Image 1 (cartoon, one colour):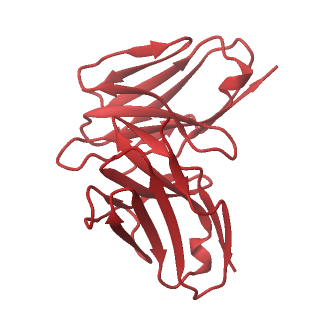
Image 2 (cartoon, each protein chain N blue to C red; image 1 turned 180 degrees about the vertical axis):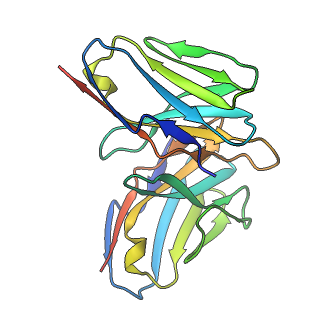
Length: 111
Length: 109
């Protein structure tokens, strides 16, 4: 079952902040975040492992609440280059390592 | 530099044709995946493979099959293409993070 992402779309002005949420009905071992620009393949942003770890680099960070089976991606002081569709991919552990992706959140950053 | 390549960026086929989508990786990764991507539906897993000659069904395997004869190559096969298989197809490997190919946009007319 796909994780649920919210919001489906968000429009920002440069410099504004955004939060994208990812929620699963299954217990999670890890959560991945990817960004996809139009016409390109998704690229990896970060992975969060079971343990409630918060990660980040530059102005993009993420948290993982394993008890709630939720992850949030935080984009601060957004830049034009942040525009794209953001996907979370969840891994429930077990013998098969594979990701189940949400439907995506379209982020548009305007000047 | 990590590379996943797909045989075609764009493909147009007729209903009922047999279609092969090829994916090659140069990273020596065991795990390979095929996804289809449709607007508003995100990335949905079709099939995956953890080793040569090994395959597992994903969430939407109907109408598809796969082949993995060599570690670096993972093929997706549409036995009899239908218009509802018009989509973007993405191949990927997975080790710590998922590495995606550029995608093949398939149109079935």
